[in-house]
Image (tube, rainbow, N blue to C red):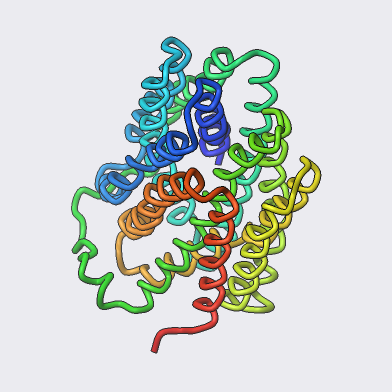
Length: 369
């Protein structure tokens, strides 16, 4: 939990800083979409292998390597303030994020007994919401007061601290098992309809959670908001998501996972449709809060559903499969949506995403036979 909290402040801060820096350097919307896609190239490619390696060899040195990638990611645009360095930083930040997402999520699931696993995933999501709030908020105001170069340097400090902690205390982390059982075959995705449905539901959640913050710098910039205001709007998403996560376990107990997801998708779809109607930081912040509250519990619910269904597989490998699928969406969606925004405007992106989330609501209510 401590490693997760420390490392995701700069990771989430970089997701705001890198697109804003690209806009500052004069990049068009499609270039910002490319940068957002680069943030998810390595998560797409390595999430599954990282999970397999963690099952076999443990997490300590993989986490240490991830911290070094994070340090290099933030120092690259600090020392080389050019557009190519932003692309390099985005790719390294994606590798950094991939390693920590798979490993910290796996540790939270494996260290908890089955009856407390859902609560563990909620705790994990609450940490994510807190860091998603503090990361963009700190980054936005740091850019306004100190500039981009100093902000990237400040974001490089947590990885240094995490690397030192792993060198000193990393031996307390669980060891891997060199002798492993059968790996999850790819064809299982095509034959197991329950697994396929869970992957699609998780992908819909991920699509909304990634595209909404991605749209905020673009839309906020288009209506004349400053970096601090945009950072505050993005932070509103995660404050409301945190509030939702505190009541998610009770909501699951009362209404069930599928019904809760269906309602969450419906309100998140409405949030996207409301974005083009906002013209001020306050109205945009209210829509952001509605979105965060509606979809804030989606990640722990879908993660627990998949973890329970795939319990016979190694946990790192099962979650690596889920994250690989989600990251395929993360790579394709920003680039496609950025191109769509350049061609048809941001409103078209909001309408299309709202329709996809509405489809997720329908899928949540229909179980495969």
